[in-house]
Image (tube, rainbow, N blue to C red):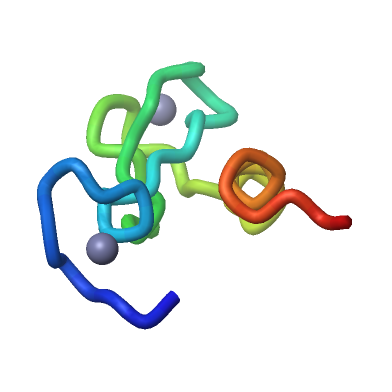
Length: 61
Ligand SMILES: [Zn+2]
Ligand SMILES: [Zn+2]
């Protein structure tokens, strides 16, 4: 977790995506509102996306 925007291919620096709970499409996780359906991206949806990201990139022992 020490790098920031180092490489476009770096998983750690790549923009995180969240599945919009309203329309089901992927949007950047740092948005407050889905740009496609204009519905708010819920904290639950973001937390789910973070959980999935952590499970993939930082598997717990
Ligand atoms: Zn990086
Ligand atoms: Zn949406």
